Length: 432
Image (cartoon, rainbow, N blue to C red):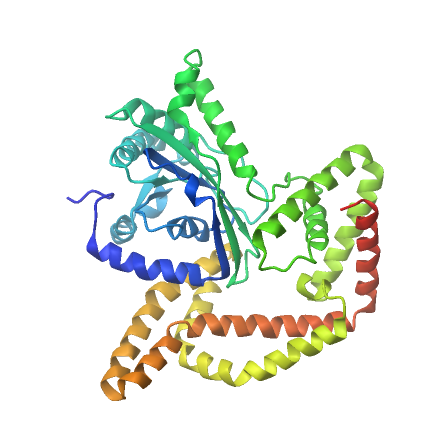
């Protein structure tokens, strides 16, 4: 039986297509720090987990290298599902919360993980254990530390074991074709760490590995402590960074991190004033969401010109959107039907991405064959070039329409504009 980490030509073919659609799921995607990935040892990737399946997919498309992933064991119960997940190089991992039996089975997971790492195939685990659409970080589980610790002990040729923290920062967790900045942090040399601290017991070392990994992940996301001030801080941070174009992902991340840091300091130094300011920010956020006005509209300096510009663009691109939307109707309609089913909204983009990879790739390939068999090759080639990205461009047009409507709502909402100006004045006084 072929090992999960071994080469598979069918997997390679599917992976080539999948990587393109994963990247196509974002209007802009940028990977930073890829040069930090160690080339001289076993690598364990450790990304934050905030956007369901999009997090491991982002790691998968990071580079062409093979990667093995883990997912919770309960989804492997059905034989067909197990085969599919294994084909995609995903292994089961048991959690303590799943019962005593899972603790025993977790030893098998560690053994399998060590085998993967021994064969120089990168291994990816999402150590928070569950996803949550927040710019924060859940406490890391023990699985990552145990696998890294066991890998160091079980390496056959003495190669070093590294944990590579990754920070995934999304422009929006729920909008398809948003943005993503994935930053590779400084690798943690677990082998060197254990050699440098022989006095530490195994439990102490596991905690040390976990803490260092968490700190590495926090450095590359907008980390906001998950307390009663979370929503206010995030709203204020986005207001403060609103003048930065959304395409400048690193600049926006830095500005948001700086704003959150200053707001935290303000809370420590002036708790009563900060509480009043945060309450004002929450009231603004609630009013903005009730009025269905996006932050893109809020940041415009000239609301009328902005609404007019959005409207003109929507009208100019309407004929193209009708053609592309009609041509790709089976793809994006199916994606929306499937995305509407999960109660957890965070899964919706995962369903959309999977639909593009599986269904639309097949339909577009069939259409390509028919076109090349029925019309001249150059017309067929042009149609195919337009057809493959058609559903993605259709989603872009939907977003343009949404922003157009939002811009007009903001133009006619004088109360919200006044609230925004007062909050921006307060932010400038705080030098945020």
